[in-house]
Length: 111
Length: 169
Image (cartoon, rainbow over all chains, first blue to last red; front, side):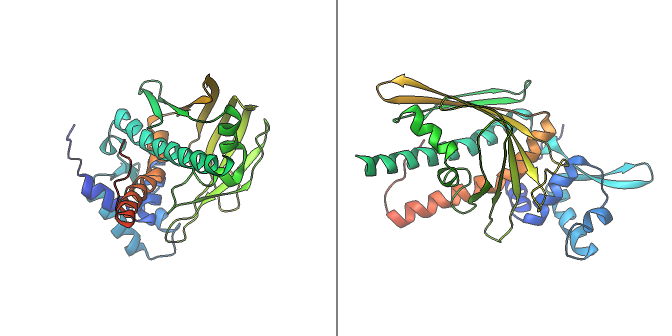
């Protein structure tokens, strides 16, 4: 269980929309780099570079699956279920803060 | 701070977040029932949501997309399982293809919303989210990661613009 989680590297890797999309597809873990490249309007080499950034951040690995190599997300690298839930909490805390703003704004006009 | 409790169960893959509002249950229900209000809180200001089909009747299919700073538009949908205004809503939240049809390559999560008056004009809302697997949770979070980041940046911008301390939680 090498805990080499580097938040800066992880966030930098995930700051790019294409790389986020690659991570999502890699969670299914069925596609190799060539297949992934077909989803994007860019060269194979460009997609390969994105995958390399994700690999360095520890977010994906290339794993042998029969004769080919598939890109698979490392869920445990992102963190355990507990900290995933922590992030989900942040997402909802943001939503509830906005709900609260909305309600207090309308109260001002109702009063 | 309106969030009053957060309960996480990593084994059951659920998270329940409870909040209280100075408003009636009907007012809180409107946050979900009125798509224009929903759009103002589902996504952060820099990643706003647009609901293109919205009806909370059981069996209805709700469609939305978010618009990112780079113009990217991830799409999502809800399938309404239960709706009992103003106290209960159960929906399945999933990702969609560009044409709006459900994208089954990505997992779905279930949201259970309970809204109840607690006296003195206040209302408690709790939202339980249940994921089918840890991978499913990770997928949803990979999408939400951007939201967390832009939110943090937005807060800093707001503090700088106003020159006052933002409420800390």
